[in-house]
Image (cartoon, rainbow, N blue to C red):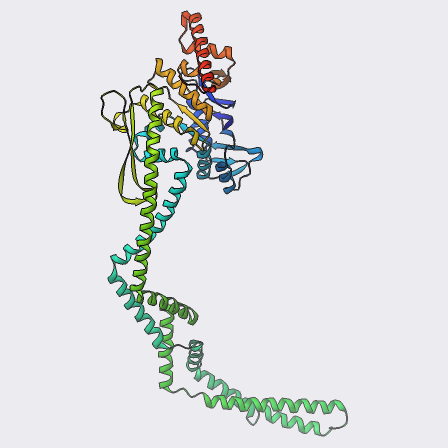
Length: 565
């Protein structure tokens, strides 16, 4: 239930705090005092699209905070799903609106508008004139009925939804197979061409690198031969390094053996001479191997180009091409075994459709059973709201296609006067009638509702006199099971309040401001007197107001004792 509202710098609101109670919370006030503004602040806190014009003139931001008490496990599980911890089972929702953006928080955690809406929908329903108009949308009728039917139907509906998801996925795949069998054959032909091309090339791992090295060597062969020949001549010519080694040995031989160090020098020179001679032999052998015939060179270039062309088409390198070939082989084999794959798919589709049809049939039967109960209870509730000769029915048609909600189309039919034919609800109801029909439906559904708080605006549109009393009684009855917050202009409805708030417009520091005042009983009498239009006959109107409150108390006592009128 809604425990607390704090709004600051919101439209006409300067700084308002309201503590709500169980039962029927009534809000009254002069036209233009800010009743709709107060409702607007609640809607904003619960994720409605923010508008910068709600920021009070002269302020930088608007702020709204709501406190809710957790009423059921559904709400608790939803909070757990969003990793939100509600201390002492109190959920604090805040929304700050600036000229640049708005920020929503739940228990101090910043959340998206979508998550804010999810939480809001589990705690509170707001009904204004627009929401009553939803009754005219026949697509809403099955949702209303399903909400009435409760958990038994909900579980079956979830099974239908899950099976429909499987069925829709299988059907989409089956339709795509039937639509383009030629495409499958073209794809197979193309895949075979690619795989044959890769296989025929018979590329070996590392082959591209080997060819690259060979071609680089071949293209630079002349330069390499010239450099090696020059180096060889420098080492072996008459004035080359080797001749100088001979001279060095001759000089050292004149003093050989005189010291250990001289022996070491001779050994080192011998090793150096061996290295130079060995290098000369290797260079000579390598030079002789540099024989690049034109045929081998041409074939190597062609092979290198072929391999690189394949890499460009099927992968950047050998490993990439092999992965591509593996993937396309699987795809080709899948298409090759298409007939068995298609037969298996259509069998799965047949089984899924059979299961879906059976589940939809069960769902439809349960809906029709609940539809009879729903229609009976709504008709009785409508009678209590002064539709004395009403008849109400839920009629079903079968949708041509399966949906996630089954194959039912539900439509509400009503007759509000003796002798009138049953007609679709959307063809007969006026604005005032819609609000009463919605109230009847909510009363019928109250004991099965997960949402514990209902807010009604314009519930009194187009009614007066005895009908107003009937609506008042029904709101009081609804307040036994749920928390109800209702804005009204009618004294008959205001008299039924368990808690009465007056919304007033005051002047503060040169600005108009909306304030909310919780009324004591004597103040409630004064407010009802104003609603009755006391004027010069204020004393009579005051007595009338007291009488209305006494009558409301008597009605509540009858509720408590289990009696009905």
